[in-house]
Length: 438
Length: 189
Image 1 (cartoon, each protein chain N blue to C red):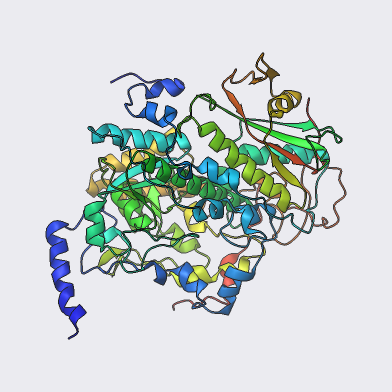
Image 2 (image 1 turned 180 degrees about the vertical axis):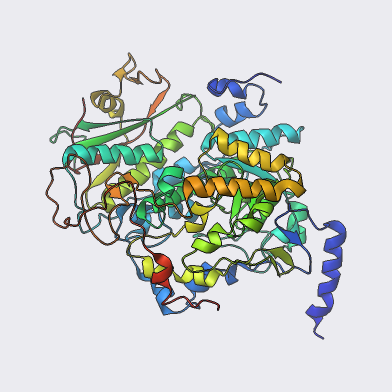
């Protein structure tokens, strides 16, 4: 037995004494031994090193999008990096912590203040999680390195030391525009996703700077966004592997949260019935173009009981569709929780929250029936926005702007008529390159 | 607990003991502010292939729609004097973006007080990058002339101090940096 193996159980014991297994709501349960996530083993870094094969490597590094807005807002496929705001924001030098610390006598007031500040900057959801070693990336270079660097004086800290020194994780996030999102698997849906993403990145950077101006430490690239999102009650983990929020459903980003020693008050995980809904619904599993979402039960993965998606098949779709759109988003769009922020959506989630557990399957079946009646299995609404039109077949060019008399060289194809958007029968199209389980 | 109305704006932060710090205390290290980062970022290249455009009127409405999606509250296009000294690249149009300002950024140096500037920089950065990706020139210009251009573009009128006053926000409006461009647009005002 090597030295490392001997030491490990001792660390594990200490962790359980000082940091008891956290309650993460009903969708996720920590049931066994847990190994902290090494960010370098996650999809994008793996692909950056070329471990997912040539087509994906090439897609990541060597493709330029045909769409001007995607070249400005998506995290790669730009013609010029300087046009991508997150590069500017993340590569910047780190500011110094203000030596004149603002005294915080009332953590409740500070928690309220930091949420008001984030909302004032444009964030849609802001919650605070109590730090726990299980939410953090593995020590020793396992952190999330953004475009810049995650280097700071705490790089050598273990997750336990980190959680001890910085007891709070602030999760601030932006939601995707509902109407644009209806044109998912389309450049309009991409716009909903990517523009709110760069806005969210800027807000988090501004919030990080503000915490430093208050005189406290603000660290990035340390905490796993989904874990912090669930622990802080941004949402619950769905079958599609996405954090499903109360107000926006699955249409929220999970950006890199801020870990801090600013005195705050932690929020608790929420219960909006995602666990009960996912047992019944399976809309995302049925419509996923690559069958990456399980139809079956939860599994235990790395000591955590949850629905486990197949990220590799999900990821593999991307180079094939690159010419027409960037982000699939189908599982987020079809999710019955993904709705506009309205009183009737609030009514549905609130009634799920207050419904006793035994009666929830009945309520879920009723709500699912309403969802199927009004939204169908998958949205194929026709969306037109600033010259984009989901009624035009991907790859074809047509000008459908009313009153446009300009001569278009490429335009020639006709848009589909009526209110139905062009909807590629993707399941059939993707059968040829995604291996499906029998 | 105070009763809050959703439209009470900045007054809804009256019971927040840290709000004054947020709005009025100048940052000790400017590197901590996003505004400084974006303002100092160099402009990128113009995409070599020009995008297929619609008529100038429709292109102008698309530029405005895109900016509105980025969060702009008032937007207009002003025609520029091609031979003016302030326009060394001889660009024909200026896209003028404005956002509401709860606090005057000139007198509120805190990160919160500078929020209109931050919102304006987000819009002008992404919008000018997008115009360059369309294959046209777009230069972000900050000079004393911006408020006058905003008035020219029909966003409002100038007050005695030469500052824009709009119908929607009164004097509580911040005119972001102008985007000078040769994108074929239709001028307002």
